[in-house]
Length: 86
Image 1 (cartoon, one colour):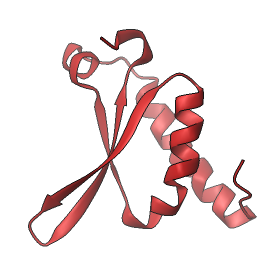
Image 2 (cartoon, one colour; image 1 turned 45 degrees about the vertical axis):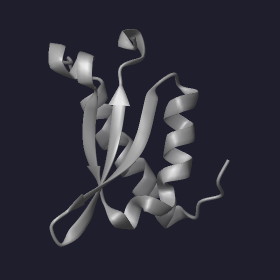
Image 3 (cartoon, helix red, strand yellow; image 1 turned 60 degrees about the vertical axis):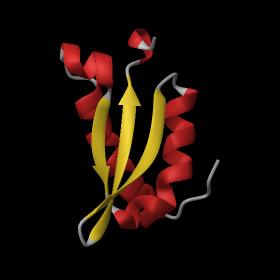
Image 4 (cartoon, rainbow, N blue to C red; image 1 turned 90 degrees about the horizontal axis):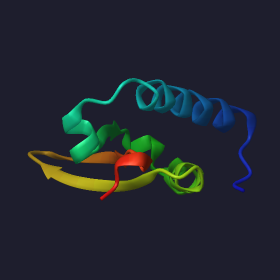
């Protein structure tokens, strides 16, 4: 497990709580089919390996994607519901 100091732990906890709030909601048919996307701030990239391992270990299918859009990069966490992966 990644050793996180208190400030980093608090930040990761906030990210996890936000993600979990969304993931625990009812998913639309489209989300069940296509997955659920979350824009991931660039300053959170240092937490990506920890978060990916955490959610994959819990059975989620999750990937971090980079999208090139005008004048910047967008980082996106894409989750697939573990009960609806085909």
